[in-house]
Length: 150
Image (tube, rainbow, N blue to C red; front, side, top):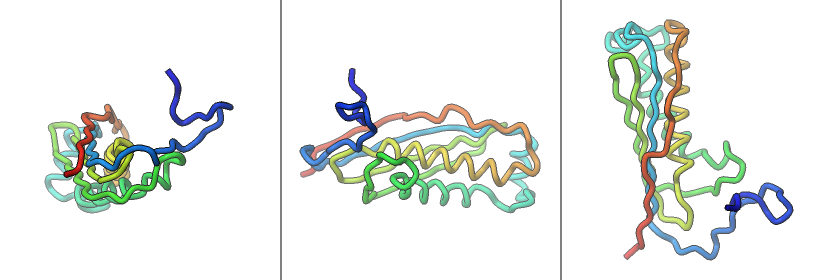
């Protein structure tokens, strides 16, 4: 099996997708920020020192998906059609999920993963004053698909 981002000399290289058809591409990712139950209570009560973290993290995730090619050197710059970031409170965690869609010749897995990771980092930043034991966990790709366009 060959790594697609290496050329014949073993140098990093952007994958040439010019020969691939434009298709509807969708990817979903998820992850969690494990926190104390007290932190969740503070979020529910809108009592964090930095304010309400959920909307800030959701918007940060959307912005991050749009900026993925500037963060990860060999990612293609994609015009994304839709980005959804959802954050749910659990007993002792934030459950984060993203879904990204575009019409291109390459997938949007990295954009979906980046959205989740940056949303988790934003939540971490918003909660760090009250919780030093937080942990970003299980950031992973949940699904990806491509469909021919009509």
